[in-house]
Image 1: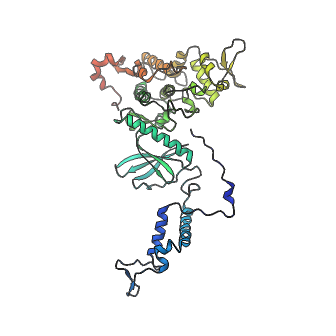
Image 2 (image 1 turned 135 degrees about the vertical axis):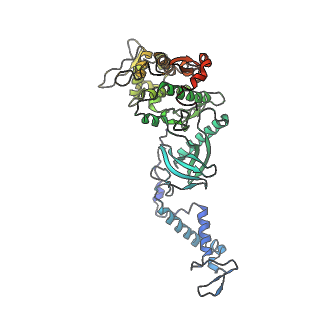
Image 3 (image 1 turned 45 degrees about the vertical axis):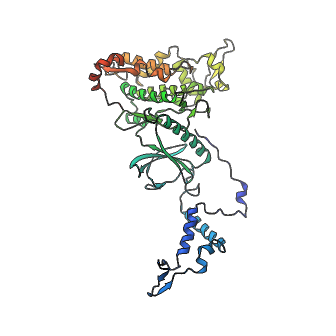
Length: 477
């Protein structure tokens, strides 16, 4: 998301008569002028009565000499004043550790912050908690609300700033449509510019789902917890797909789903830096590879349904501990998809752009499309039974054994069958056939609850709801 090129500097920069830039901060100029005007050269400060006490105790007139008067400094001595301003400015800049943005940034145009530094007289920075191609995220204390916040500090390069403005517009749009904070989408609290960096202030959240997986040593989490996560993320997608909202996330992955609290199962979707409205699709190269939908890979038009594909991949990974499709590149990604889900429909490939030729070739005899074979590798055989292939991946550990015994709570054969069916419907090749958020919210796996070690739907469980509440792993978020 973000590959931008840097244009080479103009050759005029090396001209021997290049003029030195003036100090860029008006406050610096005022401070320098005031300081030079108020000092008498000996470090003594004029008294309030218009005079001062000398070292021998005698009173001396406080009237400034003609050369130290501000009016003279800004008229007859203007050149000397600016020369002194530049001297102080470059002395200060040379003390900064950075190499870009007047010394404020490192070589990647990321702001070099210090612990305890205050932004806008309000946010006291603590530590960096994330970094990406966009810039960095820093935890901070909001001294006004007395709460912890996360500040996303965008790189100072112009393309990143323009992209951040789009993110701010989308986040503001989402907040306006979700005033009561009911749809599991991160809240933008404020935004501002600081030393040429666009800054976005968010509520502070906890671990992302990838970090949660790491904490399980990539063993994955139970189907009961998968159900809780799935229901909340579906609610977010249901909100984004509403006609009055109409936002495609475009980069749904475990790293962009955060726990609200480290000891609770509540989650929120974050990072709308790649997002767009469905009628204003800005990019063709979107989604992280493991979670990239086939229509994006083939250069076909895309919609909110690409986020549903990503969610299907995420839910499987959260249970197994491993990505469902872990391609080493685009070609390998498509091979892994077809190996589990079968061959893409010819009708879909016929509409695709020339990008399809990276992955497929047409048999001249049958006129049917087939996977290309990678040089030096075995030909991948498309699955003929996607549901069975998905079940084998989801239910077994890397050694081929059952990951959870059927006797373990929430992991019966019936429960797994419902989960596999939901994932299969999330991973339909044709976007129009893929399950929608509204439909998924009513899928048996999502509405199922556990009662006395059997799976029942919410409709039939209403009479036993009070007895079930004590069996839940954690309270609802």
